[in-house]
Image (cartoon, rainbow, N blue to C red; front, side, top):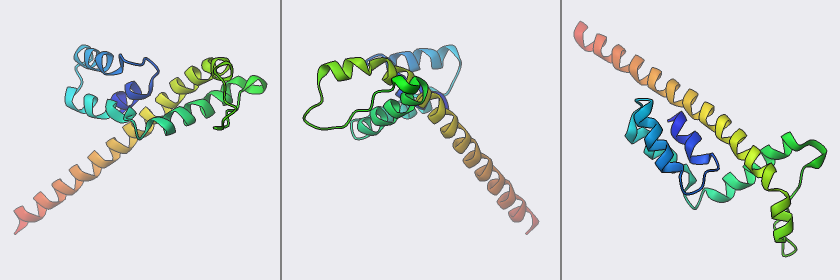
Length: 126
């Protein structure tokens, strides 16, 4: 799940899923989970991913950070000037989101396995 989320956010547009599937074979990961998690970049999520990537990039850019306001005076030059900030932020966001999803998934699996074992022990005692 963590790798899929990472690959879904990392800025290699158009190749995210192909690279994710290829690397899942190479790394012997669960292909279905990687594909499902890599689809985090669906259209309803894109504005949030783009905005958070741009904000995360601002942390790395320091005083050179660009701040985009979504208004009619947004120009191609402004977008071009903040492209590097977006790419750095997208990689940062991909790493952070991958780690968070990985930890949450691990925690959920631990809880469900613990509950399954607990229920199995209860049923064997009866």
